[in-house]
Length: 201
Image (cartoon, rainbow, N blue to C red):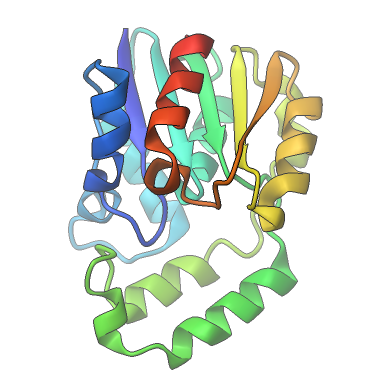
């Protein structure tokens, strides 16, 4: 069974390295910035590029954190028959507009060098974040038919409510929290994350 791990905004494929080592199983970790290959850094473009990257036949497992979780959720809602299992980590299903505005305001005052390791430069980072403001999958969650694991860090207060709602609204979903971890569980607690994924699969 092929497995795909989608990283968060501000991360790179290497952000999964410690989780992969703990999993002890191969997985494809695409570079989300690389998928755009010269296209505008807009969510619809990124999602389209991901759809073209993932196999159009057969089933596979899909796991995503933050931005990667939103992309994975979008894909599972659009193509439920293709996704064998779904893992959503620190993901939202309807964008918290007030939080995004504050976040983007902070990003605008950050220097360009602060974005050097994110895969996106500052303008593209801001463009992508702004293009996600109106995303809302609320009415589509009931159509996701595969077993789903929703994971949230114990300290990730900004995403805990969404995690609980996802576990409640997706038919075959369960929620797990990771003690002492913040939003980036693949960085904060990769071994604990890998163990949850192993148990789920």
